Every structure is written in C-alpha cells, then in structure tokens.
Image 1 (tube, rainbow, N blue to C red):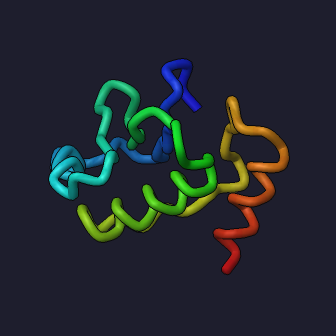
Image 2 (image 1 turned 60 degrees about the vertical axis):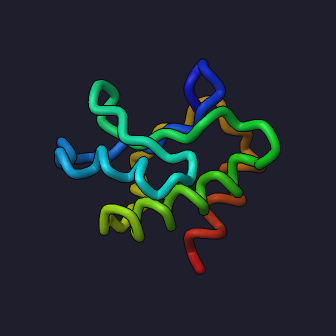
Length: 92
C-alpha cells in the first residue's frame, strides 16, 4: 500500500512501455513507470483483497500480464488478515 492510499503491485522485471495502456480499461488501474509497478486509485469502498483481485484481472485482460505472488513479496500497509486473504485467494 502506498502512503497515498493506493494499492501498489510492483513487478520483478523492468516492465514494458505497453503497460501504460492498462488505463484504457477504465477500471482504476494504472502503470507507474517511476515505481515500476501497477497501482490502483485510492482504496475507498473496496478492501485490499477486492482491489488486488480486480487489478490482477484487469492487468491480465488489458496488457496480457499474469502476475504471480513471489515468496519474496514485501507487504507494506496490509494487515496480516488481508495478507492471508490475498495469499489464499491466489492459491485458487
């Protein structure tokens, strides 16, 4: 989670210039080249889990990238309960 209240999904590689076009899905998901990852609009009505699942699907559909959770992921601003829910949802 960013200090701005946006959910941030960083990626391990350098990304691709085409990732910027994810905004065309008009779904509140954006590529941030300075942070090298995707971010949401501010979390207001949805939980971190809802945003995570939404972002993963929009990124897959919009730019053809399948995101995976690595064992080395760094969790910031996400409670242990939310972390467990996200990890559990990605196991399905």
